[in-house]
Length: 156
Image 1 (cartoon, rainbow, N blue to C red):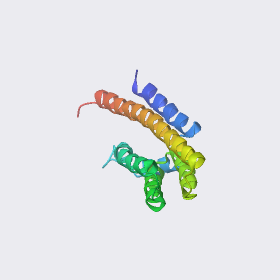
Image 2: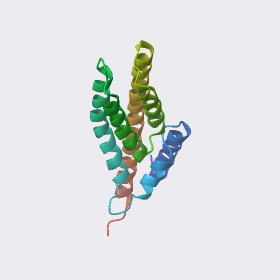
Image 3: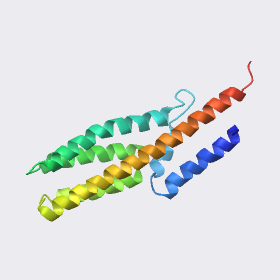
């Protein structure tokens, strides 16, 4: 596959991420910050997000599993996670985290509400995992484009 085919494939992959609601306009703003000095900036930021989100997931999960959750702490964890999500434009994950935050703000995790919170948290984690896989595939393709372009550049 030549560079132009790979570029078209990457453009189509990114378009699908937007069309399917995985990413929002913030991702374009993140891309605008990438330049020749830091050509992998977007990938590095997204990778850091996924690395940090496992810690945040753990904090949220621990808070949800307590018999009487500390709702201020739980809200703080979710708020921190939402900030990270927003920084990369992860729309579906952000939507689920918004829903989770709304449920948890009711501060009444009786059986039904606790179940709703846990289900929403599980859905948020699934959306996160799907996005991670899609972004891994996307960045792998971008690396292939870079390798293919390097291979076809004339030696000076």
